[in-house]
Amino acid sequence: MKAQKVKQTKEERRKLLRKNLYKDKYLLLMIIPVIIYYLIFCYVPMTGLVMAFNKYQMGSGLKGIYTSEFVGLRWFQQFFQSIYAWRLIRNTFLLSFFSLIFGFPIPILFAIAVTQIRKKWLQKSIQVSTYLPYFISTVVVCGMIINFLSPSDGIINMLLNKIGIDSINFMSLPQWFRPIYVISGSWQSFGFNSIIFVAAIMGISPELYESMRVDGANKRQLIWHLVLPGIKPTIILLLIMTLGSLMNVGFEKVYLLYSAPIYETSDVIQTYVYRQGILNNNYSSASAVGLLNSMINFSIVFVANRMSRKLTDTAIW
Amino acid sequence: MKQFIRESFGDKVFDTIITIFIGFAVIVCVYPFLYVVSISISSGEAVNKGLVYLFPVDLDISALKIVLGYKQLWVSYGNSVFYTVAGTTLNIVFTCLAAYPLSRKRFFLRRKMNFLLAFTMYFSGGLIPTYIVVTGLGLYDTRLAMLLPVLLSAYNVMICRSAFESISEELFENAALEGANDLIIMSKIAVPLIKPTLAVLTLYYAVARYNDFFNALLYISKKNLEPLQLFLRRILLTSSMEIMQTTGVDMAAASQSTISVRYVCIVVSVVPIIMIVPFIQKYLVEGTMLGSVKG
Image (tube, rainbow over all chains, first blue to last red; front, side, top):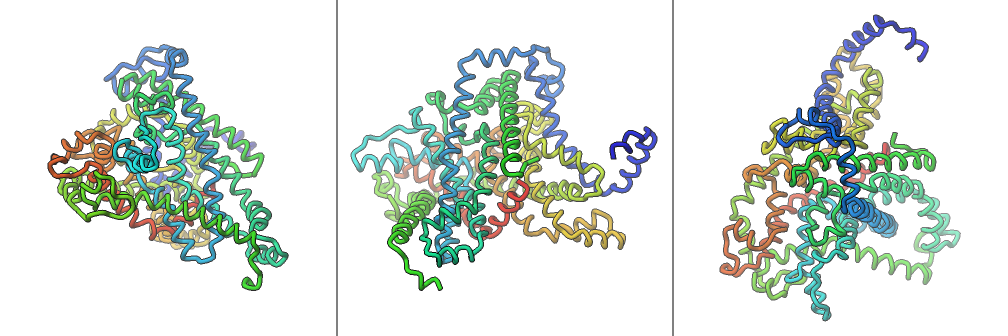
């Protein structure tokens, strides 16, 4: 293949291109709108990242991105010297780290538990009821969280009062933000995330179960020696995929739940970019911070993918 | 066979633990919704006194009437329906348009296009440049702003592509021999064959469009264009003063608690989604499996 490529002259290549264009004209016709979409909404914004090194003038529109005055690494320096840098990186990391630690094992445990149920209809209905929270919008989930935790008429505080504990103003105390974020996130996704583990457990051969049962294994042993080893590859694969999104905290949820008094534990990179850029119009410095976030994410995915290829032979690319 | 194997004491303890765990999981998932429904159809007095814990007390649908009588709810509901239907249709059409050529081994741009797509999954220009591009195109405060920036999900394209790839090559060859071009082969042969996959993708896209808050927050400020999610945010997450202003109803006078109004709004917005989940659950299993094949 390579030798051929070297030998191709300009003319031959042009001929080949013309032939290809003709041969695949309908495929091209299909994919051209897609290419246009990707160029406009994904790749033009990527080139727009040069504004992280510019001094973008408000109101200079699209053109302004490329024609503004070059300022080098000024915005990066400014960011790292500010009080925000450490706080944002720490909060972003901790929120996703705790979500992973707390949220990852639950779907596995739930999948193991739910597959112990013999009656198919019961198993199905239990599963469906745990999918529900996954499909609810972030706005509604946050609305429920805030209203349930409200110090005046929230159900949680009403119950606390019943057992003699004073109302806690959960949403304005910084120490509560992480538990609230992590637990509600896990609540929303454990049922849906268990689907893949349930499928993996169902894939284990029923004969193996029977033979182990006949050999006198109890249920605990079955799970330990048969089910867990059976779903180990799925667990590793999903763990690596989750690791890849470690610095990707959901903007919407943090944005809807946080408030100025609890920025100390709740402000994350993306909410900062939103405030700094969209609300305060500091486009350039905000996109510098955004670029930083993208680069961190990209390197994490890259490392996770490397790990995955080494450990499981499954790689994203 | 199974009946002859006696359950040991250990197994019984084990079963109890599992039952408790599952029971807890189901309660945690269902109770919040039940509670919200109960509050929304209980009388304002019972709610204010904190008498409602599980079932409705003093059945009363006046809060429901207030909310359903509020015009802005229907405006935003209508907008959401439009964004969901139009958005999902565009999503599916574009996903097929992208996935089909990428699934053809002979397509000369295949590798390059695959890279073009996959790269966007791992790197993006980020919020600010995207915002400037979208507003620079004059999309701010237009319906298109809710549709165009989210026309495609690269991940879903990959799922759709593997579905196309799984169709037997012979079918394509035969159709081509009979003189069908790729447009006809795709629409008449390939798309009907991957209907189950498209059903899953339609669901994913539709839920994403219906629940989309981010694009609305960025690009929609006019009330006549706002989707349900923006309306909900005002009702659910702002002070009761603003609820009175938005709904134009004096809560104290109507002896209503604002919390009832909030919970009614949750019910109204969540009902369409909760209704479809049980019906699509068998596709869900398929869908996550599809995703995991390619990773």
